[in-house]
Length: 269
Image 1: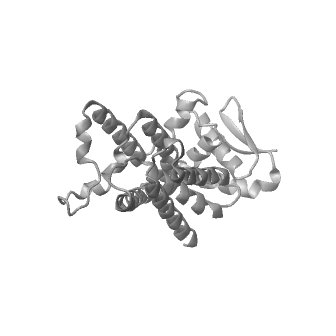
Image 2: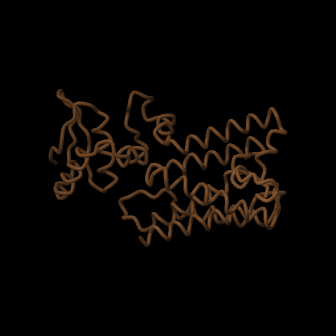
Image 3: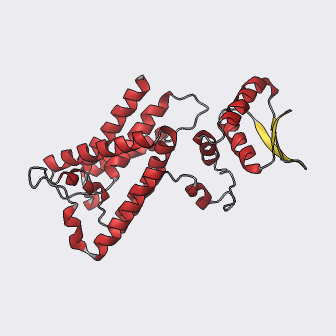
């Protein structure tokens, strides 16, 4: 056992310890009179640990460290509730993810009070009035509280992971690609009466699953193989129409394919 570094505050010590653990470097934090000491338990990994400490000191605010605390279900304590659900959800917040989340919630409340207000968001073809925004706006429409909660829960988890790991720009591009193209597919073969974020969440699932399959074993995966298999099963079940389930299945399938293609392309880069 050897001393790696000492911090006066607990937050950076906890984040660095969580990150080192995610890299397979066993260590722990001990509190002393002077502060918080990180102790390396496996001295055989001393050089790697010291390299990671030096990198942390160069860029302590990099998202990888906060993410490690989140993934380990040991969120670093920044004056919020200790190791609680709300703390974890707080540290998942990302700008674009939150904008879409709030937008869907506000629009659902408005459409619940004024049902006719959704007419300007329903899908129509551009040549039927030139309203191009209608190619994407159906993703903001939800038709029940259950529909809304289910989609927003997936969006919160998947979009926050993608935005935190790969940046807002990639999330925005995938959002519009996986919104517009599957919407067109659904409208062409089924009709314009549909809505919801689920096509985009399928896209995020496919993207994260395939892109992260090439990561080193010490890095956590956003979408496990088991979760991906479950989602594929749910997609197939949607096409059966059993139990009166009416879903925008072609939008789901189109979104998934877009995510898989983009994830595959980025793995090749």
